[in-house]
Image 1 (cartoon, rainbow, N blue to C red):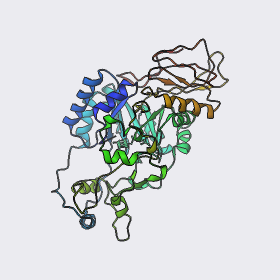
Image 2: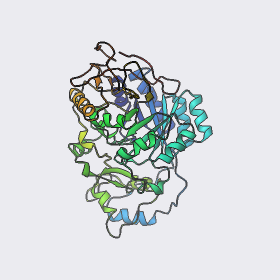
Image 3: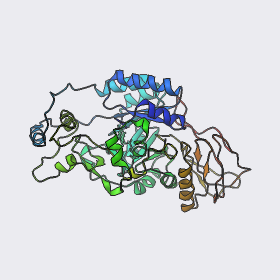
Image 4: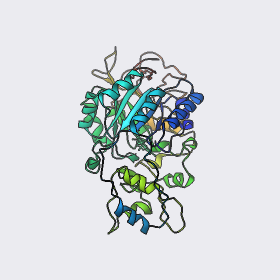
Length: 420
Ligand SMILES: Cc1cc2nc3c(=O)[nH]c(=O)nc-3n(C[C@H](O)[C@H](O)[C@H](O)COP(=O)(O)O)c2cc1C
C-alpha cells in the first residue's frame, strides 16, 4: 500500500504469519533499500513483498486546463519537482533487495525483467483485473496472479489505463472466472475484510487473500487520524472511484476534492502521471483551499479496526491451491489452503467458522491458537492438535485436514509444512 506501508506494519504482518509488503512506486532506490533493511532488522528472514507500478505508455503532458482548475480550488502550488526515479532504477533496487515476492500492478514485466526477478530468487506476482490479463500474466511468467476486484481500495490495476472504468468487475464474478483459466495460484484482493470474506474467496478458487484497507487503521500503518476516523464504520456506499488525484482510476472516500472534479465545467483529470504530479504540488490544509489529500478506501473499509485483538494482518500470502484426494476426503474435494494470519482475533475466528458454515460443502474451519488459520475440504484424520501452526476444529466444523502453506525465500511459492 504505497504511502501506508512502513516496515513496522509489514513486520507486524510477518509476526502474525503473513507476508508484509511495501508499495514503492514513489520511492527512490535508496528509500527502497532502506525499507528492506529496516524490515529485516525488525522481522529477520521473514518473507516480504515489494510492489511496483509498471509505467503507462507516454501520455499528453499538457496540464494547462487542470492547472487552471486547481487554481480555482484555492491554494498555492509549489514549484514543479523533478521527474523522480525511473522504473528501471526502482526495479533494479527492488531486485537488489531480494524480497520473497516482487509484485506489479498496471501491466506486466518484460521477459528480460522477469528473468532478472527470477534470477534474484524472487517470485513475481502480477495484479490482474480481467481473465485476459490473468492469462497474459501467466504466459509472461508470473508465479501467481493477484486478482483485484473493483471493490478494492486504492488504484485499479487495469493494464490499459483507459479501460479502468469499463473493467469494473466485482471479485465474486472475477475470481472463479480467473481461477478456472490459469494454473498459477490466485490471490484474491478487494473487500476482504473478515473471515467470511476469506472463506468466500477460498470457495471461489483463491489460494490466499491480499488485504489492504482492513489494515489501514492498524497503528503501524501510520495513516493520519482524520483518514482513520473517516474509515471507522464506513458503509460500503461510502467510497467512490476517481481519477482526480493521479489520473489513474482509484477507489477512496468521496472528498470535496473528488466531488469538485465531477462538477459541470471541471476538466477531465490529466493522464497519469501528470495529474499526480500536478496535484502533489498543491499543499494540503491551506486555509480556504479544498484539501487535496486522498483518503483511499475499499468497499469493506468498515471492517478496518484499530483494535489489535480483531485486526487482520494478512498482507499478501502466496499459497498454492491444490486439487487432491486423500483417504476419506470428500470425493473430488478440492483442498483449499490458506494461511490467515490473525492477531489473536477471537471474533474473526467466529467469522471464519460462520463463513465456512454458510459455504458448505467447504466443511472445515481450523484456526490455530496462534496465528495460523487453515481451511480445507476433507474429513478429520486423527485427533485435533492444538498449538501454533496447527489447526483446531471449531464448533460446527466436521472436518479438519490442515496443512500450513508458506512461501520460502528464493523460489516460487510452495506447499509444505505442518499437517494434522
Ligand atoms: C492506501 C492504499 C494504497 C495502495 N497502494 C497500492 C500499490 O502501490 N500497489 C498495488 O499493487 N496495490 C496498491 N493498493 C491496492 C492493494 O494492493 C489491494 O489491491 C487492495 O487494497 C485490496 O482491496 P481492499 O483495500 O479492499 O483490501 C493500495 C491500496 C490502498 C488501500
